Amino acid sequence: MRIEDERKLDYKDVLIRPKRSTLGSRKDVDLFRQFSFRNFVTRQTGSHYNGIPIMAANMDGVGTFDMANSLAKSGLFTCLIKSYSESELISFFTANDSARLENVAYSMGIMEHDFEKFSHVYNHPETNLKYVCVDVANGYSERFSCFIKQLREAFPQIVIIAGNVVTGEMTEELILSGADIVKVGIGPGSVCTTRIQTGVGFPQLSAVIECADSAHGLGGHIIADGGCVCPGDVAKAFAGGADFVMLGGMLAGHNEGGGQIITKYFKTGEVFETENGWQDIIEQKKFVQFYGMSSLAANEKHFGGLKQYRSSEGREIMVPYRGEINTTVQDLLGGIRSTCTYAGAKKLKWLSKCATFVKTGEQFNSVFIK
Image (cartoon, rainbow, N blue to C red; front, side):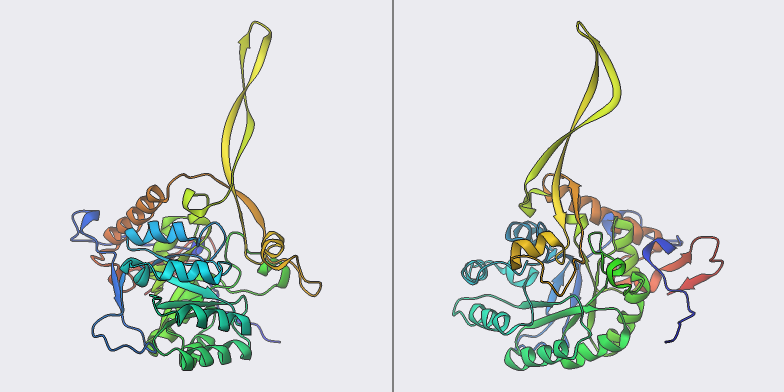
């Protein structure tokens, strides 16, 4: 046993210090990024990716076909849920839509049947598929890195997203094994209880900073996955070095997620007078169920229940119904543009170089500079 004495940081532990800026308006900020991928083999020249590097997580109620179609119109990315059937995925990826090619990833596990299913979809003669997200809760197993090697050897012309991990050395191993983008985050999500159930995790901002440094040294990229509850957190993730930011709870509760809308009634604490006496004022609110993909609800829906050898590592919550996704996207992107104007970054690409993090709280009295 050993103890690391260095203080690690979550998004809530820092603020971005404002700086003198030449930007006159938020509209002057360019949020689009271009990336080339280390292990992706292609005959095409130029950048392999061009878009706004915000991703919808491959979670029920978020990573749906409808969500992918809507976000792609704005240049945002979606990792699809794993539970779509082979025929549904072939139908989706054979559509003649360039936005799907550039902004949507197929998601899969690491079982033999997962490999076979992906092979059938990818090898369909009309499939237009460029990205695959290999997603497991614990990216530290030898089995996982071996699977990434196998997938890279079998499919050299696919961009591989792999995770989740939280340390530099495992980020490097996955990239050297064939991953192009590594998903970073264990336990920070709003509906994840891994830290409670297992005691395992890593403060998310510090994980992003460490893993970004390791990935960029090898020509790889990272996704900050989880822990963002507001646009300011997303901006902090980018300022910390994240190439992409993946969102679950922030994109849940919308029509595109496909969840059932549940109406609840609450007493406001106020009353009004009627002919029959005083009546409580009742307020109507709408919600949508949202849950982690290791929760009891997810296991019952996709795997026939929770296996005897494991426990639930996700919670089930009700998120407010938010209507169409476009309004949320506008609010999110507007917040990030505003961050860039405060930090003096004309391009999102420059934010990590322009940002200065100020540690908050009585226990912090120093400045951490990027």
